[in-house]
Length: 269
Image (cartoon, rainbow, N blue to C red):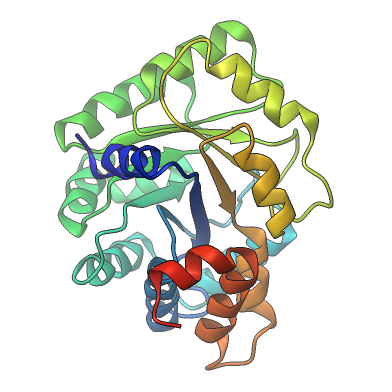
C-alpha cells in the first residue's frame, strides 16, 4: 500500500476528511519553500502538492502563474524541486505529490524523473496535460517505482473518459471544482458535487476537490461530498504578499485560520 493510500485509510479510520495544500516549489526561494512545506506538514496537511514551476501553466490562474515565474526567475528547476522533497522527507512522513505539466518532466527525462522522484521520497505525480495514451505509458513507468498517478477530472469530462481516468489512476482522483483555471472564488460550484458522484460510479479511489477553495466554509462544504479539499491559490497568495522572512509564519497563520481544530490537534501551538 502506498503512503497516499495509507494516509486516506488513516483518515477513514479516524472518521475525518483530508486537507491537501498546494505550493509552488522554489517560491520565493528554495530554502523558504522547504520551510513552508515543513510548516504545512506540521500544521495538519494530509498530503502536500508540490508544484513544478513552468513557463506556460495553462491550467493556473494569475496567482500561481506569478509564483511559477518568480521561481523560474530564481533559476529553480526540476532538480531543485526534488531536493526540496528530499529535505522534507528527512523529517516528515506526509505524502508528497508532484503537480506538474508534462514539458519540464520530459525535458528532465521521464524515466530518470520517476526514479529520482522515488528516491527523493515523492509518492505520486499529477500530470495536468498528459493525453490518455501518454498517461497509460507514464502510469506503467511510475508503477515500477511505486509512484501513484493522480489524474485530473473536470465537470466537462465525458462519462467514457471519466471511467478511463478513474480506472487507470491510483492514489486519488483530483476533481476540478469548475471549468476554468485555478484561483480564489466566492462559492463552490454545484458541479463539483455532481462530478464526485459521477466519478464514484467508476472507482473506490478517494476524491479530492480543488480549484478555488480558499475559506474554512468552502473546505467544510467540500468535506460534505468529497474525501479531501485542496487549497492552493490562497496559500500561494499569502507567500506573495508577505514580506521577506515572514512567508513561513504567514502560511502557518493562514492554515490555523482555515483549520483551527486540525492545527491545534497536530501542532504544539
